[in-house]
Image (cartoon, rainbow, N blue to C red):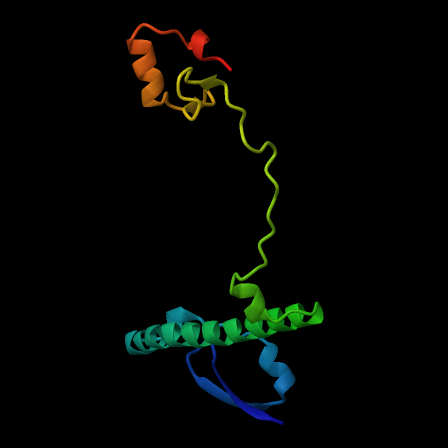
Length: 136
């Protein structure tokens, strides 16, 4: 289908040609030095709008490509983006740490030796006791 195509010549005159769509892929080079200040201002106003329009169009095309990519592998893009992946529990390397210290009178008071000392251990040491006496 032929399309009318407008472009500016280097001498500043506009030319209209009837071109087949194949020629629309060609770039038209504008010599900005030939444009007047009002023409440059008009062009300056049109550029951000054209950039925004093309960004919207490009994003839609990319989204469609990503959807097709996911669909070819048996997924829906919405399923991939929701973050509702099945959580796989990884068994911990160790497990429960063995008790290293136990109170001599109260067997329920235990300490693995890791982290901060429990109050009962601090009280034992303050009374002059030794950690060696609490070893299991």
